Image 1 (cartoon, helix red, strand yellow):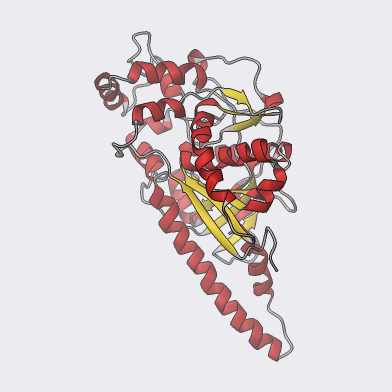
Image 2: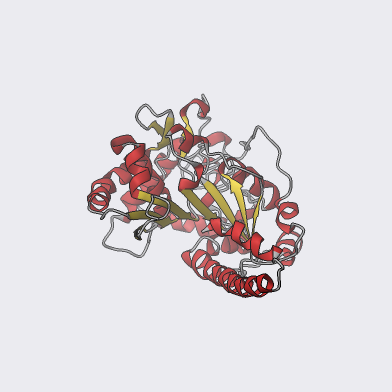
Amino acid sequence: SNSPRNPIMVRTITIRGFDASDESVDREKLLNRVCTADPVPLGTSGVSVHRGLLTVARRLFNDITEYVDRLAPGHRAVLNGHSIGGSLSVLVLMLLVEKRGVGYVQNKFLRVFTFGSPPISILTENIPRTNEGMDTGIEKKGTYPFSLDSLIDKRTGESGDNNRVVPVVEGGYECEVLGKLGLPADMVYGYVQPWDPIIRLFSSADALYPLVGDIGEDGKTLWSSGPQRALRPITRAIIESWDGWSRFRDNWGPTGMQSYVSTGIQHILLPEPIRYLTDRLVGANVAIPPVDTVVRISSAELLPGLEKTHPLDVFAISFVPIALRSFIHHFYPAYADAFAEYALGVDNKKAVQKKETRSSSSKGGQSSFGAELEDDDSWR
């Protein structure tokens, strides 16, 4: 049947992330937009969002709505993007609700997909009353109004099958931000690699902000307190050779420390347990592992969950192996290739399951494995 959730055809709109090699873009201006992160209200919705990226999203808005307005009846649009492209996709969705209304969005859009995207929104009432600024970057820790059991306990389940989607919370997955806008949590699906530092930007779990938050009085000496770290001379050399450093520092310093939360329903792309244990107990492996399990989790639980199972702080990320692992796990191939192989594995198992179900039905039996896979298909 033709409905918003079962369209005749899906049209995809992709917003790419930051590309440092693209000389057709004013990269320094865009980078400063990304790092002007103070919250501004989104109309009267009760939601506040990242100032700099909202400015970029407003520039994209007219081009996207012109395309969406021309969609044929029964066609739906999907917005998606990697890194800040995913964050901009979410902001365009929010602007569409503000300008066109919830009904327009639900009739025109099927879903937004984000991959390795930083959080950019928060309920206005939850914004901390004071911004402590650059001097307290390292001391600030995230505080959350709940506790979360280990994701490793959640991911193993009872069946022992690989290529599964394991829900962390039974039942619904709330998203307060989308709820304020009148949208269901499953309007946005996010996918994250657990060692990706960019998904923690502008949040209480941010490991990168203190690199600026603890800068010396000369504006160039990083980590004025704490131990020596391997990236110190490399980063100092980059800073001293970049003419735009002072403006970037002055933008990021006062505004970068935020408490934004992820949007929608999140999915963590986890490797097999052995890889997890070696990363934690032996040493950083920079290679991108195959995806063994996709863990579905609410947006409120994502970052505190990762802080427990995949901790990443400013001291750790300052050593070369961990820094390399972190950023390799953010680049597009970490989300494209590994996830595509995982999805192919799911499809192959579904094909086998259907064949077994038909065979079982002909004999009067039923396949329990098939029912599990059908339930898990909603991760797409």
